[in-house]
Image (cartoon, rainbow, N blue to C red; front, side, top):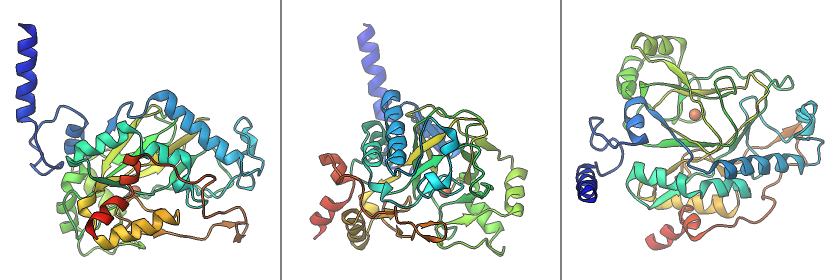
Length: 342
Ligand SMILES: [Fe+2]
């Protein structure tokens, strides 16, 4: 009898579960998982998307990658946390060179089944592509780089409203309230259109792309007046943090002795990418170039990397080892879909 009840209950749940991509049926629906948090709050944590031990191994791989530059960095010696001993990492923890987007640990995280499945649920499709985004390597108490001042922003063009992109990162180390990391403005994604209607005439903070909007002091006050609070997202190793591109966010540095490492993972349906974008993405993959979080290769990042004012001789255009992908992982590059569209 019990099994009949269970079966009936699961059948009912299946029949009533919303279909289509997130937000396609509004916000007054119920999934019974992290998607409800995304609808209501604009962010969510998928606990244990990567098994904890594997996440810690990826963190160890990042330490090893840093040590293998042979610049003197030693994970067990905090005095070696200095730009002279490290590849170039900016004050926000972003490492934007050295083909880090195509390193073994970066691709391994992107191919983690629990990560891919979370995005499959959000978009209601298995036909996804993934960004070739960066890795965040945040060390505490850095005095050798400028201070990390908050830059609250949304990664979406105000002229293109609605749910367009889900951003994500896989957290690799313990990340408590003071350990640095992601700060999000809870619930503000639902106010995005109203906000931009109000601030249409405002002088904008400069951005190199229209797909970025910086919140001024007046904008932040508007959000506060509507009851939106800024929340520090806490996470364990292996947790996947997700946020709607409309959700205002920024990151802070660790105030403890805890390092903060994460891999940015952003997926979207391949159907959202044009043939030209998939061709750009193929080039970026084959030349192991970085993209921003947009999986459709909207931006390919190929910036010079400097050390003491000169081009960094330690920069490289290829990862240490050729990229190894599973069949599923290769689909995430978009290349098989491009061949279908030819
Ligand atoms: Fe961002």
